[in-house]
Image 1 (cartoon, rainbow, N blue to C red):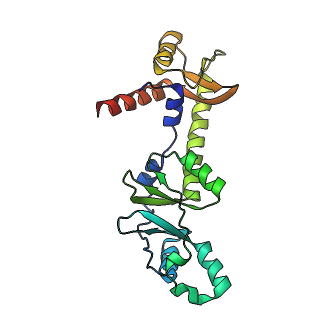
Image 2 (cartoon, rainbow, N blue to C red):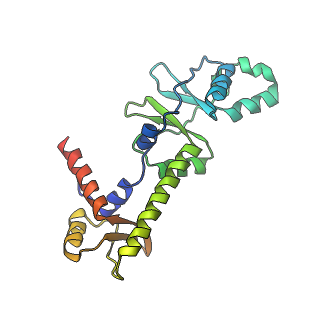
Image 3 (cartoon, helix red, strand yellow):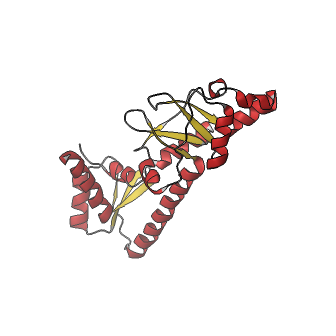
Length: 216
């Protein structure tokens, strides 16, 4: 695998795996198709969440019940719906993400499709966690804040010389730029737009990740 400038930029973005590692409040309570809406509302209330994931016996995601689903059905039919099984109102066409999905991609997907809960599944399709829009937004804001801090530091160090590369430039070329041009960072541009920047430290970390992945 050839490491490119685009790979390094994408590798800097926080992943859902990072969010799971630091957020200890991710829910463990889930439902089955035979659970009632009363069960769902209890979990939503106890965990202060917007929805609950529905699993089959293999812990694969088969649906999701949101607070809005429950309120809408109560409004239409009355409180008796709380004794319904969740499969009568749950959303079966559930979008999921894996642990390596970036927080940016997840947030974009959630905003575009107007849902507040994203189940995260492992390679076997089993539920690992479920995040809400606000949790992913906080992670993205933290990334932007850190990127802005680094950019301000770099602007203070840079002379008027800027080294730019396209997103598909390979790591060998970037390494040579750091060694021969002695720059603090390489700016990645495509079609006149800045996609991001790569510092020497970030380049070394990305190279180490790829080397470690090949070794395993």
